[in-house]
Each structure stands twice: as C-alpha cells, then as structure tokens.
Length: 290
View 1 (cartoon, rainbow, N blue to C red):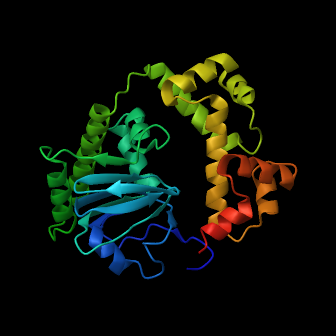
View 2: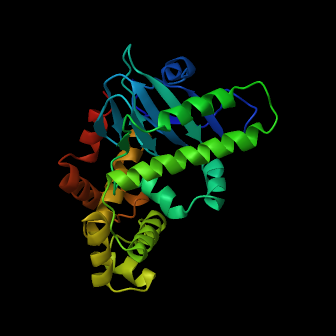
C-alpha cells in the first residue's frame, strides 16, 4: 500500500445520467482500477452500500463495523472507508454527487438528509428488517438505470432514488429513539456547519455560542440533548477526525498540518492529538500506512 490514501472522485461508468450511478457491490472490485477498495480510501461523493448477502466488515472513518445480510451502509462525502470482500458478499452500491443530492432537497426535508449521514448521532450502518421492501426498490432502481428505454429515464431514476432515501430515513427514525426538539436539532446543525467553516479560527465553544446568538450554557445543553456530548467535545471530535483524514490522505508533515488546523505551535497540536488518540500524529500516520 502506498503511503497516501486515495481520494476517489465520482466517475460514472454510465454516461446517460449525470451525478448518480448504481452498480452491483461485487463489481466494485472490477471497476476499481486505480485503487484497492479493500484499503482505506476517501470519496468526494455520497454512497449507499446495501449488502444483500454475506457477513463481513466495513471500515468507516477508522472504525470497523460488523456487516451481515441486509445491512445498509451510509457514506457521507469526505469519509474514509474500506470494504472487506468475500466470495458470498453481494449487494448494490448507489453513488451520487453532492449536486445530485441537493436536487432532492426540493422534495425531502433537510433534517432527513442530516439524520441519514449524521455519523456523530447514529451508526452509519442500518440493519433492514426482512419484512421491509427496501431491497426491492434497489432491485428496481438497478433495472431502470440500465433499461435501454430512455423515455423519462431521468425522472424514473430520480423518483426511485427519492423513495429509497425516504424508506431508509423511515427505518432510521423507527430504529433510533429521536425525541430531540426540532429547534435543538436545527441549532445543532447550525453549530456543526459553523465548526466546519471556523475550526481553524477557534476551538472555543463560547466563540460558537456567540456566533449562534445563544449562551455557552444553552449550546452545551443542546449538544448534550442531541448527541450526549458537550459542545467542546463536538469541536474536538471534528478537529481530530480532520487531522486523521489529512494525516493519512497526504504527505503533509504534522508541523504543516498544525498550522493548517489553526494551531500556532506544532508542539501544541502534537499534545492535543495525543490527548485524544494516545498516539502522536507521526505514530498514527505510520500505523495507517502499513
């Protein structure tokens, strides 16, 4: 394995539709000419991986998840993941760009989209009950996607995709007790977006509370209600994950990364990283470059 983790861009093998593709899970090995899908890689698109058969594991952001029949894996743009294929592993992969996904916002509430890919709130793996028809819609989408009849293909594929997203979110809602007030969820989403854009500016929870126009105490209460963590823990989790992704996805030195992440001294970054991972940045990089 090379030192760097590949960054995989969306490139459909089917040029009739823009921004979405569905293929058999087992065909990923055939399609992946420039990287090994069983080694960690980072995608610039979203994906649903439905396992219709087989017991295996799927690595998502450095956590290995057990997979069995009818497991659905939700991958967000930018996440690091890796497959573990076996002879009996079958299923489907729906790949779609952020642009394609945003088109669905006209039909689907943004809170639905958030819950599907909020890995800090829910497991990225959803177990689909045997008595549900989600698999049937994946079958139908695959058939329609490669149907030679081109009339209304885009509308049919879009409609089936929307149904699949709705079905998945319905399962998420039923399997996870989610009683958080909608206003709390809305503010938490805003908080997350602020972290993504301002984490190099500040790691102080009070900074984000003021930016949201609320008190630090109220922000902490929201985070504890939604994710059972403090606001500071949410900030630290995000920065550590960004650091991990950068360390294994480029040849950047930890000293350079420290300044890129907003640390004024590289030694402070090393101490910060070790506090949460029990490894120095270089030790972490070596561990995941084997």
